[in-house]
Image (cartoon, rainbow, N blue to C red; front, side, top):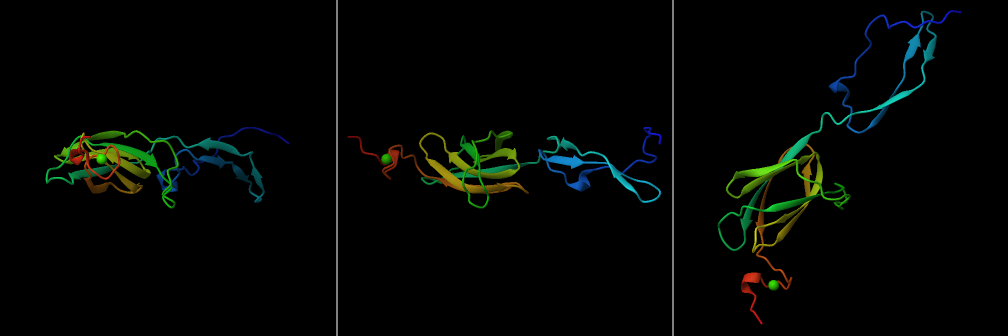
Length: 166
Ligand SMILES: [Ca+2]
């Protein structure tokens, strides 16, 4: 019985985007040879992990209003923490945005890798923080409009501006 190596006589099926492979997942493969009598012989299994070549990102556009006037607020910051989309519990450390900027007065945008997030939106000085508990950036951009409360640094429900000095 002879043994030799030969190239496959015709190109085998390639795995392209239609296979829907996911990033960061380990896949296994093996070659199964079928001879002219239908006898199948399989190679040992090999493995590869898909590289992060097709990361999908979506953008949250957030228009920030304030509760004490009609003007929009610029200069807000967002802390984005990944959550479980079902339980809405935070499941990881905050992640940095991929890109951010100002779209127009009062509307800023933050771009993140695809996922579900809790946003802690903090306004400029004098305004408080607002929590958006579940923002889905899985399949599309999101447009949010939020109203920031006035700052209340001691948490007594009296805004800093109305606090009476003692
Ligand atoms: Ca207060």
